[in-house]
Image (tube, rainbow, N blue to C red; front, top):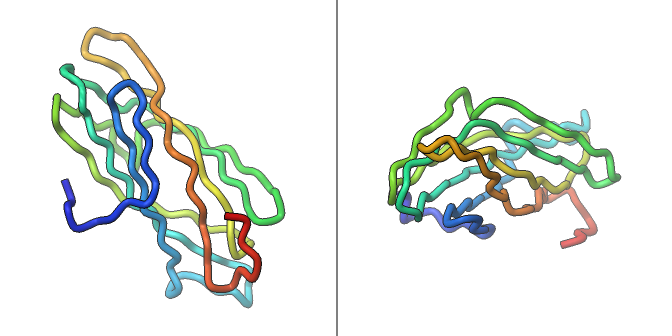
Length: 137
């Protein structure tokens, strides 16, 4: 969909590819108040021969000191997109943390047009900022 975006993280499950580009957002962050913000761009590619719909999401967010948050919800950015064969869906969201680095991973709940439901892996990706002195990845 967006040929000019380079996605450093990508994973395919059941013919559906999820690609992620995380970026530290300096303008929205305030390191002095322990607020570090990232934007992440996600592209979902339907490489199978049937129509699918993204129903829900499950995120596991871990910060640099090991605090873990679980985020579950319907759709993404207020939508439950339908992807026909060969189509892609792109969205941008964000994540604030009280630490200068972290990790995110998870899965999307998907439904085929015949009603069969399945999960698609969101690849684990790192949230790194220039304020992190030691990086685990």
